[in-house]
Each structure stands twice: as structure tokens, then as C-alpha cells.
Image 1: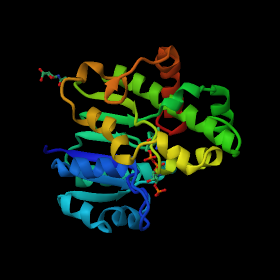
Image 2: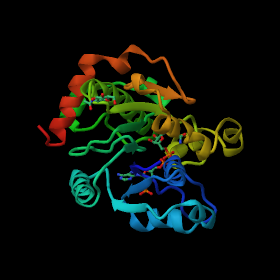
Image 3: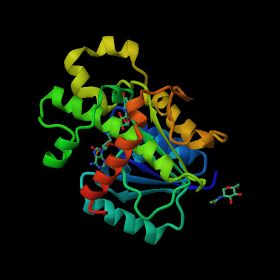
Length: 264
Ligand SMILES: NC(=O)c1ccc[n+]([C@@H]2O[C@H](COP(=O)([O-])OP(=O)(O)OC[C@H]3O[C@@H](n4cnc5c(N)ncnc54)[C@H](OP(=O)(O)O)[C@@H]3O)[C@@H](O)[C@H]2O)c1
Ligand SMILES: *[C@@H]1O[C@H](CO)[C@@H](O)[C@H](O)[C@H]1NC(C)=O
């Protein structure tokens, strides 16, 4: 495959003996297939260490794995990332929103994959909270953080629904997905460690390689283009609740997001 891919958040689990995450697995897999991979991470050292400290990983990578600084918590960083990208790259074929918050202003990927989660089923969109607090929910307790996480994953679904509508007729497609519950990646740890112990968890959870399979499927599978906007899990399209494809809410969320990002 000859294409350029940006993957947000690929530096996961880089200390010795620690674990790899879904984004890193995706970067390695796409690189092995010949893609030029842009690792969009906020910490250069961690990003490079994730690749170069691992001999097995280094051997399978082509030389086309490039770090570009991106902190999704800062709109300024998102903008300067986009500028750097546009200056140095001449095309973008696949965008993998591994943290589900990346910004694609000014770019035109052929395909966009947003890593959401089944947890979106617990999410709600509170536009009042968004307008008063510029956040999806208030509070810092584990429970509040879990609620925010589920709301943000519902946002990923609505975003993909709206994006697919806006992309109709362009031959550009987008998908959202749930990787499945992966043991040992950071995303689940604080909340679930708190509730259960590791030996029990390991019976139910898969590793990052298995967790990355649906991302790879959506990024690489030919023939799924008519399913643009759909939600995937276990490498198959899934039925979703009506609130994940509510046209009015998706449109409003898009517009509110544009305002919050200073894009309108
Ligand atoms: N693991 C699961 O069981 C599971 C289940 C359902 C859905 N998901 C979804 O799958 C995706 C990947 O999950 P994961 O478990 O592999 O991820 P993860 O272990 O939570 O990794 C998070 C990654 O995001 C990066 N990151 C966090 N905030 C950032 C920011 N502001 N700017 C740039 N990078 C930032 C972190 O980089 P630093 O090293 O710089 O912190 C880290 O590399 C996520 O969207 C997650 O919600 C995961
Ligand atoms: C979409 O792809 C088809 C088939 O390759 C092509 O005929 C059509 O012109 C393309 N449309 C756009 C808007 O690029």
C-alpha cells in the first residue's frame, strides 16, 4: 500500500516491560503494509521511544514513520500541526482518530476512522453544560470522568454520522468503531482497576493487537464504502441506538464544536 496515514496518540506503554496500546499497534501494522505513518503525539521522546526501544518493532518498520507534535488538548497545537503537515506532506489517505478528538481542518483524507467505544451507550449530550462549562460534564471524581468519557464517545459517534452526511458524493468515507475492551492499555485503567482486580480482568480483556483489528479493518477493507458513517465492532458493522444518529443533535453538536474551536 502506498499511502500517508496520520495516527493520533500512538505513544502508549513505552516504559520497559509495559504494554502497547491500540494506536501503536495500528501504526506498526500500517507501516508494515508500506504506508507512510505520521505519529501525531504530544511527546516526542515517548513517541520515538515507543518505536525505537523495541527491536522487534524496529525490524518490521519501514523508514517512513515520522513524529509530528500534536497535543489534542490545545487548539493552537492542532493548528500548528495542520500547518506543519500541509507544508511537508503532499497528501493524506487515511486519518485514524485514535483518541477520537483529532482535527482535520484543511486536509482531505480519503478515509477517516474514529476510535469510539461501546461505552457511548451510557453517553448523553448536554448542550447547556457545553455552553456554560465548555465541557461535556462537570466534576473530577472517577464517576464524573467515566461519564465524560461516555459522553465524548457518543460525540465520536454523532461526529462520524454528521461527517458522513457532509462527505456524501465526495468519495471520502468515515467510520466509527469500538476496539473491544483491551486489558493493559491506559484508557480503561483508572476506572476499572478501581473496581476489579487484574487477574479477574485478564479473563475478559484482550491485548492491543486484538484491539486494533477493527481499526485495521475499517482502514483497509475494500468494499465497505457504502457503509460510510456506520459503527463497527469485531470487524463488522453493528446496530446502534437512535441517539447515535440523531440528525438534529449531530448537526447541532457539529456547529457548537465549530464555535468552540473558533472555526465559525
Ligand atoms: N482500551 C480499551 O479497552 C478501549 C475500549 C474502548 C475504546 N477505546 C478507545 O480506543 C482508543 C485507544 O485506546 P487505548 O486504550 O489504546 O488508549 P490509551 O492507552 O488511553 O492511550 C492514550 C493515548 O492518547 C494519548 N493522549 C492523551 N491525551 C492526549 C492529547 N491531549 N494529545 C495527544 N495525545 C494524547 C496518550 O499519549 P501520552 O503518552 O502523551 O499520554 C496515549 O498515547 C481510545 O480512543 C479509547 O477511548 C479503548
Ligand atoms: C468518485 O469515484 C468514482 C469512481 O472512481 C468517480 O467516477 C467519481 O468521479 C468520483 N467522484 C468524485 C467527486 O471524486
